[in-house]
Image (cartoon, rainbow, N blue to C red; front, side, top):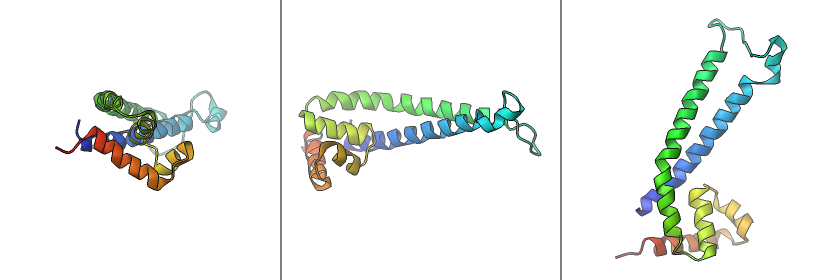
Length: 134
């Protein structure tokens, strides 16, 4: 694993979260109580006809993309978790929160009580420990 892989991991985690939110939003729209007035399935009037199959197809495509993203980053996450074993618990928690959970520094600050400046300093130390200069 190289340093750039950590940023790929973080970006992939963010993409996965976005996909998960989009899937949930589409699912809630599809089974919305507003659509229950005409029966168990929601049917919208449009020039194209029933939109339910289109929505189902979009959801299926997003789920496939979601699963692919998950499988793509699985190896990176396993390798990163192995690398984290070298760190002390506080640095491990910070690295996991930032890179694996996709949290921003302000969220980590709220959890740990460390100011953002100190978190940035700790992140530099984490990177130096994980990827020593040769």
